[in-house]
Amino acid sequence: MKQIVKTALRSLGLEVRRLRRAEPETVEDFVRAGRVPWGCGYNAAKDGLIAAGLANGALLEVFRVGGALPAGYGVAIDERCVEYPWLFAQLRPGAGRVLDAGSALNHGFLLEHPLLRDKKLHIVTLAPEPECFWQRGISYLFADLRDIPICDDFFHNIACISTLEHVGCDNTAFTHQMAHRESRPEDFGKVMLELRRILRTGGSLFLTVPFGVYRHFGSFQQFDSRLLNRAVTAFGNAEIIPTFYRYTANGWNVATEAECATSEYVGWIADAWKVGKLPQPLPLEVDRAAAARAVACVRLIKL
Ligand SMILES: C[S@@+](CC[C@H](N)C(=O)[O-])C[C@H]1O[C@@H](n2cnc3c(N)ncnc32)[C@H](O)[C@@H]1O
Image (cartoon, rainbow, N blue to C red; front, side, top):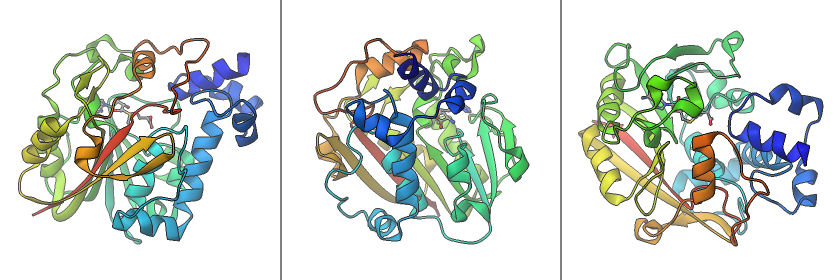
């Protein structure tokens, strides 16, 4: 039980990494424990699935073209298992300046990937995180995405993965600073303008947000079609390439925007993000959903 709590806290970004390293959990633990999202072995299973996907050229090609995923892909795993492969599938080898707007790439196993290793990566987020990889040459800038202190046309590509939905919301679970308890849900538009400004013409913004029925959970909002259109419109003149993924009991797969429109985020985990504490015992959804049940992945090429 103690181990389950430690794992779950780590999933919430809390500082229990030292404890976890002493007793590493495994994918086998996840299977043995009944594949419970956020439970024992969850992080090992999630990171393992993502790492395997990023090393699998055939699977990345499926993500690149928006094809159907293998049956059962990502059962009981949250949306990062589609967001990362979708992003990496579209990055090209070689040098270039990349911005991670929101710090979703700040994980050792992602930063090691050859597609990132050769690039100059800058991470902009509100506050330092327990894990930091400055030794690898990653540049960290603790700043607000609504007012980015970087010159125009600087980046070749920008990734904004599962971040836009947090802008202007209660970010105290990430930063522990009361100034970041906000209620300005419209501010994502300012971020879109800023991301355009610092992106070169011809460069891509890779944007993902949880998608479906509109919800405001306090620490983030789930985007619906109306909000997504507003974000895309705020970015301005661009080639727009949207892909939607939906979660069912059979795992994640590509879907239409209309099919995703009724998707519901797992409410109890949204509440847990807010307070930084998981409920015990952990609830289990009938479809084993971990968090979002749909995600919008939009590539915007600046024209
Ligand atoms: C992508 S998540 C957390 C990142 C974490 N490393 C992970 O992979 O789960 C949301 C991030 O968005 C950041 N964020 C929210 N609003 C922001 C803003 N206005 N400017 C910069 N960062 C913001 C939060 O600080 C948080 O780190």
